[in-house]
Each structure stands twice: as C-alpha cells, then as structure tokens.
Image: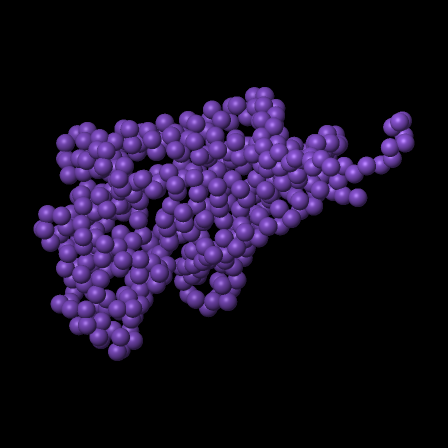
Length: 462
C-alpha cells in the first residue's frame, strides 16, 4: 500500500524538554566573551585588591593578638584596629552614654529633672576620649556604666538622644566658626534605633568581662567586635574596587547577548529545538553570572580563606563562619538585579551600542539625580529658614540631615545596592530607608523579568 493511502495519523511521541539546555548556551557565550582582551585585563585588575585586603586582614588579626603590646612592630596594626573600632556608631554612642552615666548615682536621679523640665540639657557632661587619645590607648568600659545603659528606659533613651543631638549641633557650630571654608559634613544625627542598638551592645558586652575585673578592657572589646571588623574589610572590598569593575564588565557583556540574537535572527536556530524560553533566559543570565562570580564572589571567598590561613589564631574561624554565607548573599544582591536590567535593555533594541549606552547612562544619571535632588532639598530648607543668622551653619546642618535621611537615594543604583549589601553584612552604612531599597530592587526585577519574557517569546508567538 502506498504511503499516500495511509492518510494522516496521530503523532504519538512527546517532545522532551531537556532541563540542561541552558548550559550549552552559557558555555558558548562564555567562550566567545572571554576572547576579549579588555575583559581579561579587567579580571586581572579586579583580583589585585585580594592581596591588598588579605594583608589588611593579616594585620588586623595580628594586631588583635598583640593589642596590648607597646613594642614595635607588634603595635603597628593597633592604630588600624583602633580606627575600625572608633568609627563604629554603636561604640561612639556608648562612649557618649557612659560619660552621661558618670554624673549620677542612679538612672532616675539623672533624668528626673530633665524629663520634668523639658530642657534640652543634662548639665556639664564630661567629654569622651578624643580620636588621638583613643588611638594611643584604646578604650574600655566600666561594667557599672554598661549596666547603667542597660537599665535605661525608652523615655530616658529619648532624653539622652535629644541631648546628644544638641551637643553634636553645638560641636558643628563651633567647628564652622573656626573654619570659614566650612567643615566636612558630619554624620551627627542620631536616631532612636541607633540608641536602642547601642543599649543592646551594652547588654552583650557585659558577658565579655572574662577576668571579672569589672572593666571591659580594649582587648575584650576588640574580641567582641572581631566579626564586625572582618565584615568591614569584606564590605569595603565588595563596595569599592569590585563595584566599578562589575559595572564595566556587565556593560561589555550583557548588551550584546540578546540584541545580537535579534539582529542576526538567531532565535530561529534556538527555537528549532524544543527549548523553553526560561532555558534561553537562564543560559544568557548564566553567562553574566559566571563572570560576575569570578569578579566578586570567588575573590571575596578567597580573601576570607587567605585571612583565615594567615591568622595566628584559628579561633577566628569560630566567630566568622557566617561571613562566607553573607558574601554569597551580598553577591547575589549585586548580580541578579544588575544582570536582569542589562539583559532587559539588550532585549529592547537590535543595536548593542544603544543598550550599552543605556546601561552606563542609568548609573551616571541615577547618581547625578541623587546628588542634584539632595542639593535642591538642602537649598529649599535654607531658603525656608533664611532668617537664620548663621547661614553657613544652617546650610551645613540641612545638608547633613538631607544626606543622612537619603530621601532620594533610591534614584542611585549604586546607593541602593550598597544599602542592601551593608544590611547583609550588618554594617551601619545605609543611606535612607532600607525597606525602600528592597522594594525598589524587587520592583525592578519583576518589571525586567516581565519585559524579558515578552521579548524572548515574541519570535515564536503566532
């Protein structure tokens, strides 16, 4: 019987969707992108800070072991460790609060007149150690002062908050009068959240009086802050040298990945096989993520391993074991939104140059928009308070408040991602509301995914 007499028959075979198809797309894209000499140079330059930061971690750990030594060269790193400790907001707040505690025999005696009168002064509070004195001798906390802070009520914390803010304002005013050019804008404005966190730290430090000396010595304080010191170094590594390398690297790779497929009609080749759009998108994302992992995650993990290896005491492993997890999470926060956004730009045009231009423009314009609107907010507040005789003081004050409030930080991709990473590492570097940063990144990811799916599936829609 001829085949033409058989007629049409039902197709009984089901096409199999291989879940590993994205690997082929990713491997081919990686091999093509790695041919770029400039890409290889960026990788070499990005790995250089690993050795610098590794040396810093070695100096930190060595200094922690010899923190009480006055002999050279064991005392070299103590200045670096002291600098790390001094710039911690909760430690500086504790230094101020302990000076207040020295004025009274009890909590109620100190704050009763303040709360009843409503005045914004607590009297002549002795000054805490200056920077130079602190760098030379370190700092210690008496257990009775920490217990004083631990027993403060919310109402008493608010009273101390008002006083410390006013004290910092007076310090700013005096510095402006001495320097007509205007001082650097200080981050003087405290909040109730920071005061509450300082109280929590005071409670935790009470358990670090290991020798029962009734004093939390500087060595014990540094031991408590050991994980924070490591987090500072790793955050500095991911935030400064790596962030700019990531922007350049994504701008070189991602804009070409989808736009060239649209221009060369390579979709016809991809969709000639039973491949799902999600497999195609995952393959393109994997190309960028591979390079970003080699630029951020792997160097940071290697830096952690190098720091552990060079540490004179293996006990650092027990107090910093969560840092590799934080590194991976911080890398994901950096990689996933940036990759989706860059691929979305690539899918909107057939010219990769336009996608690259849009990528770099967003970063530049976002930062400029943040700076411009913050400046306009400052000028507006100065204009509304034009009758203030100390105009220079008012301007510096309003600029400091505007920058710390960070009402426009969500416009800057750099500031937004930095806020999220600082939250992961537990470092007080947030500018603005951290919830707004999470919301902005989440909305951007959802919009990018929706546009990418529509653009990728358009060639196969009938």
